[in-house]
Every structure is written in C-alpha cells, then in structure tokens.
Image (cartoon, rainbow, N blue to C red; front, side, top):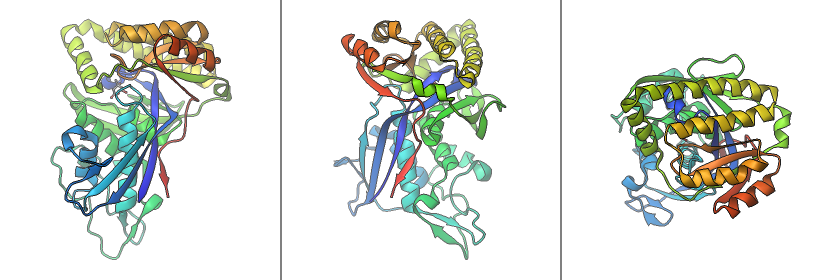
Length: 368
Ligand code: MEV
C-alpha cells in the first residue's frame, strides 16, 4: 500500500480575482486529506469500498488518465479532515495527495545521468498535462540504460503542481488558477501573481487557456514572520455547499454582463499587493484590515451568502480581520485572531462549524 497526505488551504486574499491574473495569497492549513492506494485484481477501480464512478470523481479520473492509464485497477481509501465543497481546497488536497501516491507507486524512469525520461515538468512540456487529448504516454517514456526510481525519489513538487492544476482546471470548466494546488503541494504560504515578485521566492510559472483567454501566473513561496506564531486562523463552515466551478462561472457571467465590475477585480489585486507588504512586515492589524476590505469587494462580486455574513458578524468583534475564503456562495469564512477559542465559540453559537489552524502547515507528504 502507498499513502500520501496533503493539507487543505485557506485563501487569505485574492480569490476569484486571481482567475483573471490578479495576485492572491494562500496558506496551507493543519486539516489534511490522506489517500491510500493499492493494486486490486478487480476489473473496476474501487473507492472507499464502492465501485468507482468516473463522473462522481472528476479529479481522480483526470489523474487516472494522466498517470495511470496503463496500470492495473486501484483500490483507493480517502480519509479527509478537509470538508468537501467548502472552499478549503478539498479537491486540490485530494488531487495532490493522490498524484503523489500514484507517482510514488508507479515510479519514474530516469537516464543514467539522472535526467527524467518520464513525467510532467515545466521544463519538459507542461502543456501535455493540460491537453484534452489524453491516453498518451508520459513524455519520453522510452529509456535505454536508465533506471527506475520509486517512492519519495520519484516525486517532484513541480509535477504535482502541474497535474493538480490541470485536473482542477478540467473539472472547473477550464477556469482555475494554480493557487489551491500550489498551497497544498508546497505548504506554508504562497503568493500567486501575474509577474515575478522580488519580495517572494519564485517557484514556477503556469499557463492556461481559459474561456476568457490565455492566463499566466507566477507562483512564489513567502516566508511568514515570527509574529504569525501569535495568531490563528479560525475557519467557520456554513455547511452550505457551492461547487467552485459554478461560482467561478457565475463571476465570469457577471463580468460579461457588467464589464465595469472588472474594477472590483483590479481593486482586489491592488489590495493584495498592499497585504503582501503588511505580511512581510508582520503587521497583523494591517493584514486583518485588508482581509475585511477584501471581503467587502468579494461581496460586490456576489459571492457571499447570508450564512457567511452571519458567521462573519459573530467572529468580527474578537478578530483582527474576517472574510469569506475560497469560491464563496456558502462554504467557509476565516477570522485572523489572537483569541481562537472565543472566536470558535462565537462561530458555533451562530450555527457554524469551527476549525482552528495555524497559518502555513506542511505541504504534501508521502507516508512510507
Ligand atoms: C477557489 O479556492 C479559488 C478561486 O479563486 C478559483 C481559482 O483560483 O481557481 C475561486
């Protein structure tokens, strides 16, 4: 059996606007999704003891077509602390953990000089993973005189990021930024931007052809100053499920009908740049204020929900900042606070389910 886990994520700033090339900041959270895989001699794949239905699991299907199209059937067990359809990156966590487990089990062929002869990489040809023309062999899978690596040696965070982003995009109508998949694969805090930012550690670029045109993102890691140890994120789940693809499509429709709303997208981008400086300086109050401001702009895009507003109102008096997180329309809100217990109680009293996390948990992890 091979197992891997990946964290959920919270977007601190920039959701929705990042789909249009504006910057966004996300952190990995302590709640994780673990996936165990093993080969089975049944004809069908099995998920959690049930027959696998591709239409019910588009992310699994996307990975199967990209990483496991020639292998034997698999039996998957998914244990997740990340609530599904709640804006906490449950599908990204599942995709990244599963991609890691599959690659570790399948292995990777390398040449005698250690160069890859198999797999997806920004340097080789990342577009292969994004192709609709699936059922292809991995790039360069023929290798004479090389060797095969398995387990942790076969895993590469760039490849996981590409595969995760490609399957997220495919299941979200072709519109997905790499924010969620970068946060859950790299862990810590990430900044996704339309340009390389000097203030952050650049990791890789991503391109995607969306229905609204070609998009390019630069993915960075940011280190959190020590003052972040003093604060927690309290996550309040409304229990209302809103598929990300529908919410993203709703914003696209809004912008098409009301092009002036693009000003709000641009305003979110400017706010994120300000927040990046507050984050670097460790100015928690400025960061909290920017979160609350970001929420107001998201409300203007029509992605809030009365239950989100209710939880936000309950948490605000004890928090530095409050906002919805992720796609909205239900799902979760977050509060940045030094009083996690009080905020959790306020959220529960208002009818939500509270989760507490430090900012910036560890990324994908293979369980040997
Ligand atoms: C979803 O967690 C975040 C969105 O910005 C969509 C995306 O970035 O792909 C709403």
